Image 1: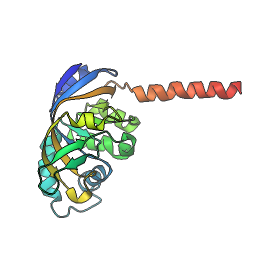
Image 2: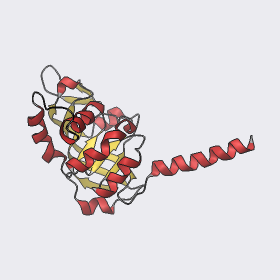
Image 3: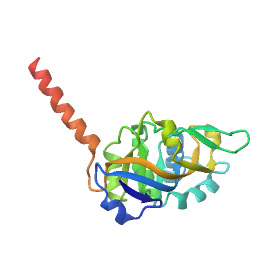
Image 4: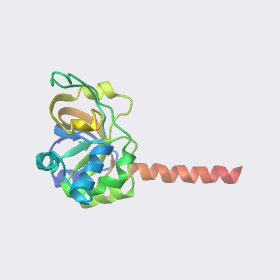
Amino acid sequence: MQELTIPINEETIRCLRVGDPVSLSGVMMTGRDTVHKWMVETFIYNTRQPQGDDLDVYEVIKPLLNGGVIYHCGPVVAGLETREHQFVAAGPTTSIREEPYQGDVMRHFNLRGVIGKGGMGPKTLAACQEVPGVYLHAIGGAASLIAQAVVKVVEVYKLEFGVPEAMWVIEVKDFPAVVTMDSHGGSLHAEIESKSRTVLEELLVIE
């Protein structure tokens, strides 16, 4: 188990390989479909004009994501009325939904880590090599267990997106994950897909 402290430097990222178990500590941010679309359209492609507090939020998250980690997660959060926020469940969301955006977000913010489940595609893998960064697979079906790694909720931005889609800034300690896409072009997900396709083709021939 390699212990990683956020923000993560380039040298540490380059040392990680597919299959390495890691434990993360530090401050990270959640972000799903709405957040990625907002980032890309408003600040990367500039196809949408900033509105409301967009620019203020952007200036806050830029240093947070520089060398940082984004977690594909739609948490269950207690204490919404009192703003004494606490994560009750924090399981990973299926990551492939962010494939159209993730590479651009990684390059723009110098993002070192992406956490989710199910893996991502060639665009994200290319960004992992360029930035560099890694994709980390979290444990699906263990939302309550993962929530125990959240020491505290530091802040929340864009709550108008909805609780699952908002940007939750969280401090974590010993957050468990496994490297399944690395900065050297390795992808466990692509490897499994290739092997599965080969087996399927063999089965079709037999039939």
